[in-house]
Image (cartoon, rainbow, N blue to C red; front, top):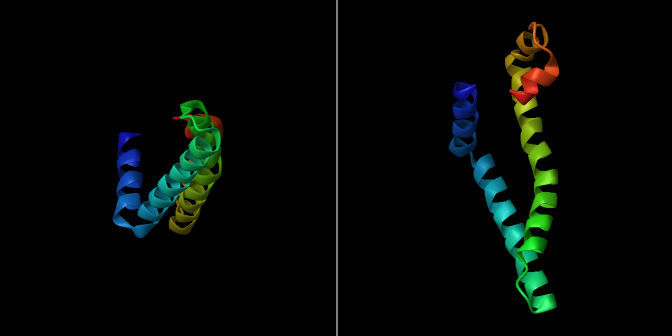
Length: 93
């Protein structure tokens, strides 16, 4: 499992896709923080964490769609689907 994580993290940071997503996420979360701290004249981290989690809800599927497309292009998805483990256990582990 650690080898797969290393491969995915390395592929994100060797291509501009990872940097674009990180930059977009940081920019959007800083905009949310600025707008809500300016609107309420108070710094509330609970709102920042709430909107950051919502932002991640939409960002993470975009990253995983790229991973699924790469698996399909390489032909390694058939190895995952024909294994003796269930798809749920593959995704969780």
